[in-house]
Amino acid sequence: MSLLEKIDKLDRRIIFLILLLLCFFPVLMPLGLPVPVSPATTSAYNALATLKPNDVICITFDYAGGSAAELYPQNLVILKHALKLNLRAVAVSFSVGGLELADQCLAEAGWGSKTYGVDYVNLGFVSGTETGMAAFVKDIQATISADARGTPLSQIPLMNDVKNINSFKYLAFTTSTSQDMYVRQFSGKGVPIIGCIQSLYFSVLQVYMGSGQIVGFLNGLRGSAEYEVMIKELGIGAISMDQASLTHWFAVLLLIMGNITSYFVRKNPRVKGGK
Amino acid sequence: MSNFMRTQFPIAIFIICQFYIFFEFFIPIPGGPALTSLLGKWVVCVSNFALLLGALNLIRFHGKNIVKQTKNEWYHGAIILVSMTAMFVSGWFFKPLYTWLYANIYTGLNTALMCYVGFYFYSAMYKTFKVRNFESFITLFACITMLIANAPISGTVWGLADIGIWIANVPGSGAWRGFLMSAALGMFAVAIRAAMGLERAYTGGSD
Image 1 (cartoon, chains in turn blue, orange):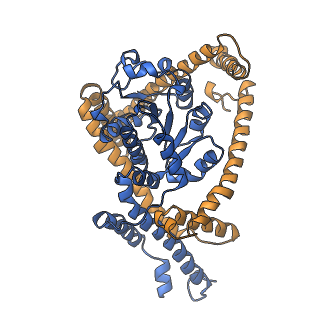
Image 2 (image 1 turned 180 degrees about the horizontal axis):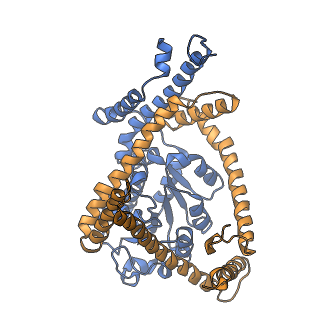
Image 3 (image 1 turned 135 degrees about the vertical axis):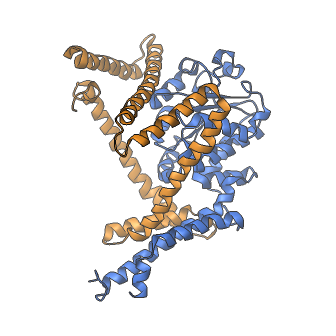
């Protein structure tokens, strides 16, 4: 077997091993590769930074553990920023998995130092996906009777100022699935909408940002790293950026190498399967 | 149950609600928004019952497998039911245990599953993503430029990330807009079919 064939038939376990090393190496020895901030993240940052203290923001947690690696840091950094700005926060989940993550994220962002029910609240899970969102937009008190802890909304002081979507000065939706329904239900109501998404949906959110239906968005873990750089509080997003740079370029290398070797192997008549 | 109650009655309810919500959106009706809001609240309630129904169905299906000792399946059912009971009981009675299970078992397993898929993506990129014609070349080119654009370090080298960003912003966005419009038209067509009683899957029909 020629060298070319050996490379073409590279054992997938070698690829796995290299990928594993590229993931671990930057964590043990950070390279400090630069993280330029994109316009989408800058817009998302500005939408929050221009709010006044005590303004109420809403963040949705519509994902579960599988997407948490990319989406949780985005929620975390937004909540940290909101805390710095002395805003009030309402967390809600239109996906079953998000309820616990919202509690965890609020605690990790430092909201424990604030008063629950006065400065922040977790409204818990609202079922019905898009219909649930539509009901939430129109009348929150009619849609949700109690928060995630079971306290009736009428007994939560913060909820006296929150009636419908127009009570919020900023709304960030975080989702691992379709963003279309969020844009359909939340945009055009006079509230700046921010998307927190997986990098996979980058092109989709570009469309909505271009049309002005959302103000900005955080593009996966990279978006959270950029936001962390902007608020000068480096966290898991920034730490992961060395990994992102290395693994993305490794993927590029694999694609190019795989195609070059495959091309020459196919052209070589001595090789089985070649022309 | 009579045919009327099983098929015609649900379709009648569906058509009335659909027409009402559709026209209420365009034509102001006194008390209309309140009724629409009430209907929305009912849907949320029904969705909660659907979740309960899903859980009961899961118990019924896996319970049957366990009782019958179905080969290669009963132990999967047992794992699901034990996990489900553990989460339910802890969520109801021991909240800290539930939070711990969720953060350290459920989230961890879920993330591990996604990572596992990620490793296979890399292997597939090398083994299967081959240029064989012009279309596959275009796909590969877009893929490589997007990967470069998404790597944070690429933004530091002038022009390196720009091709990928241009592809996402111009042809990518254009294609997506076209897709969204065609999907919206498709949804409208489905709505019309449903209003005419031609979409009957939710009544147990075949279409």
